[in-house]
Length: 109
Image 1 (cartoon, rainbow, N blue to C red):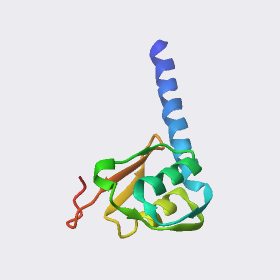
Image 2: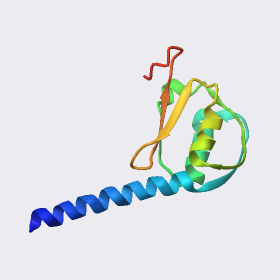
Image 3: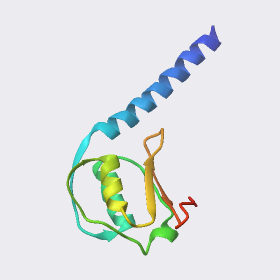
Image 4: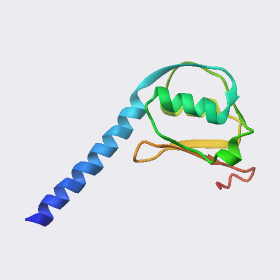
């Protein structure tokens, strides 16, 4: 009986986590962020969308993100902010924004 309850609990936790990710991706947020350092721009996006953010600060501290003005989904805002910066962002299953550096051969560090 305990195993059955554990399996139901595990499925419920996974389902709740997945629902949170889907909700974050389907919501739209209004942004008015000037061109700025990546960590500042992404920090604002994370705060506005109530999302956690992980980024390699030492590798991105000198990179400028694009200005973002308008209403966008979280993923679209991240894509616009990081376009042509050599960085990529994704949202993991826990709803955390993960930023990675991509070199010219598209190899992720």
